[in-house]
Amino acid sequence: MSILELRGARFSYGQRTVVDDVSLQVSEGEAVGLVGESGAGKSTIFSLLLGLSAPHEGEVLFDGQPLSRRDRALMRRFRADVQTVFQDPYSSLDPRQRIDRIVGEPLRSLGIARGEAARQAVAEAVRSVGLDADVLGRYPHEFSGGQRQRIAIARAIVSKPRVLLADEPVSALDVTTRIQVIDLLRSLRAETGLALVMVSHDLSAVAALCERTVVLRAGAVVEEGPTRGILNAPRTEYARTLVAAIPRLPAA
Image 1 (cartoon, rainbow, N blue to C red):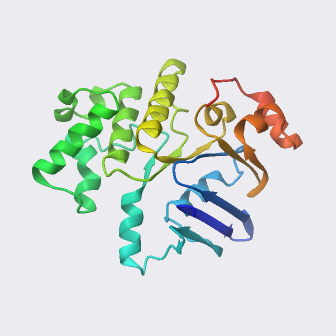
Image 2 (spheres, rainbow, N blue to C red; image 1 turned 90 degrees about the vertical axis):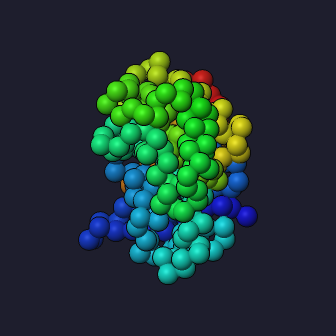
């Protein structure tokens, strides 16, 4: 059974359909990439999977159950088990808060841990992303872009989630830092069994992290399958265009 699923999802803004009958399953420990040009529907699908928007048709399921804000117990588990990393690490971190408060926020808001248990969990999360404990008393502006993204990842994993939703997590970084963050995400997945859904316009970044790729165009799925297969033998002209247009990173 999948952890997270879209089933026949449709979503429109006025008369414009931006997600058109999309079905997607994410299983335990699986890494799935969603790729496509601007306007392909990636951000809206990300919002649906995160529970920020509800589909106008179809449904979102978590552990096989329809996601509903009326089901408080289900939503509580969902908020703990599904965490996010966004494109811009600086704007996603509160500049007024120290790093220990930023990383520990999910533990407080979800009621998972407080006091010494929370401090230990925060320290463990920071160590797991390759940062020293001395970062905890500092502020986001004191760090580089790559370090800030590591801090954002630490915040996302501190609650020990089962799924990480990543929205263009390396596109704002320089090439060297980008590869380092990709290696970090690979290591975290190997160590924890974390499932990953990565949204990107860049098929090469998805290829470095995801075993399966879903290609989107104008809100619809036009191709889906093993990432290596799409890279090496795309079946649609649209996917061939995406493959031809991007630089390559080491495949997963």
